[in-house]
Amino acid sequence: MNITAIYGSPRAGGNTDSLMRAFLSGVRSAGGKARELYLRNFRVYPCTECGGCDQTGCCVLQDDMEVLYSYFQESDVLVLAAPVFFYGFGAMTKAMIDRCQCFWVRKYRLKQDMHTERPSGSGRGILLSVGGSGGSRTFEGVLLSARYFFDALDMSFAHHLTYGSVDEAGAILRHPTACAEAESLGRKVASELQPKA
Image 1 (tube, rainbow, N blue to C red):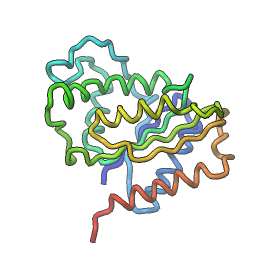
Image 2 (cartoon, rainbow, N blue to C red):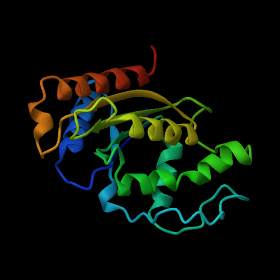
Image 3 (spheres, one colour):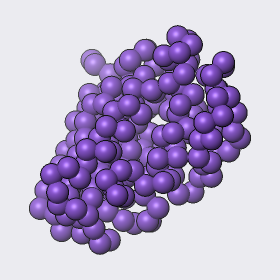
Image 4 (cartoon, rainbow, N blue to C red):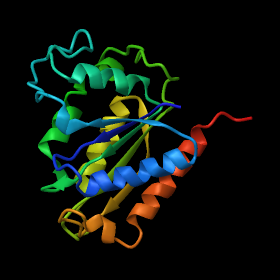
């Protein structure tokens, strides 16, 4: 079982951090473990659309994405917790996603083996997100971006939990169901990954 949890908010201790902690509490209660990565502590340059990955499937920029790339490839489950900014991902999370263009090139243009430590297509992606707006379209942008982010990593978009009208720090803790639902999902995911007797 290899679960990687990406904290994608620039605000430490914010609402998506709380959702991720609830999810991981569920993972641990089911006997699972996870690697936790705080994106705000990584130096990630934005994609420059230089075309450097077009021939090799490897990004030419040198920064902390090299560490993230290796974790993406070896994870059975990748969980991304990130808030909505202006109906999309914030700049920090979007930069990480855009830098996975090299995986898209490898998969779709070069038709290369994805060189992961898991069987092709067996990985699962999960999104946890909150937004300040209560509008019906609040999460359309992040859901679409997440779907194609996980696809580039050769993962299915398996689950998502999204909560609107959640803005100020700590608001998610007052939501009647959010943390319990995140914890329940964590238990479910960890249980599914346990070796069958």
